Amino acid sequence: MGTNSEQSFFPSHHWLYFTVYLFAFLVGLPLNLMAFVIFVGKLRRRPVAVDVLLLNLTLSDLILLLFLPFRMVEAANGMQWPLPFFLCPFSGFLFFTTIYLTSLFLAAVSIERFLSVAYPLWYKNRPRPGQAVLVSVACWLLAASHCSVVYVIELSGASSKSPAANGTCYLQFQEYQLAILLPVRLEMAVVLFGVPLLITSCCYSRLLWILSKGASQHRRKRVAGLVAATLLNFLVCFGPYNVSHVVGYVQGESPAWRGYVLLLSTLNSCIDPFVYYCSSSGFQADFQGLLRRLAGAWSLYRQERSVELTVTRESKEQELSKVESR
Image 1 (spheres, rainbow, N blue to C red):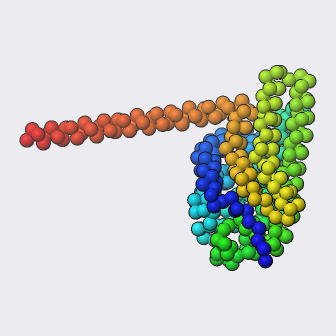
Image 2: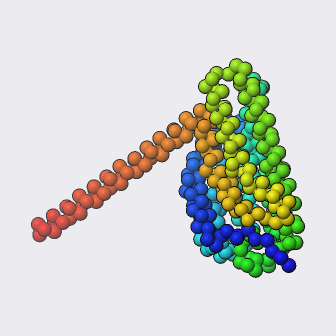
């Protein structure tokens, strides 16, 4: 029975994947940790729906980043899976789930932002954190249920204790596996990308139209920047990857370039914190305040270390002088 491979480009380019994963981990992890702290603080002060959604989006990015080291190990090993087999479907399941959670939460946030402008008095008096929690749970379940196909495919093509015969993880598929996988991917491209993109585009276009009637120029520019960043995020980070699903369904096989565009989706975890920063003056103030506190804590630590080293040096000099006086 024939196989379809997504790794025709891996033997000579696996270090590209390692480099991108490492960059995303080193840049995205501290930024998302700071964003997580900020949103937790905002929810403690005054829980509102949009902050609940953004907290879940940040948590999703953190999960992706925390499991990227498994991808780094795989890339460093020439895209052969050297880890225990149970980590293969588990890490893949989390990886793809968190990628699609981003598009779902961005769509939910766009609805919240539209409501805050279209119905400002109603929105201000109804923070609705409970409803946002229910929406968040629905997003997690929707993404997880679709991405559970990783378990179906991996467990159908391998024993429960070892990866596929070629030693890879979710890279090469038999024809009977593609018969299951390709239609699911097409559905994911429509339900988890196309529909959220349509919702986001409609909400933000309507929002810009409302603001064009009476908002200040500064606010219109800030919101326009937010809309542009969000839509570019959709189109650049997620668009090519989901196009590969459509192409794969039409061709009956996974495109060889699918892995490359998946890297763009990985880099999204670094972009989200910048979108938060540009979209809210409150987030900017909290972010700058957190930076000042971290800088102050680091300065205090350095001063304490300097004092300790000075005391230690003086103590050694006194002991040495005592020895010499004898």
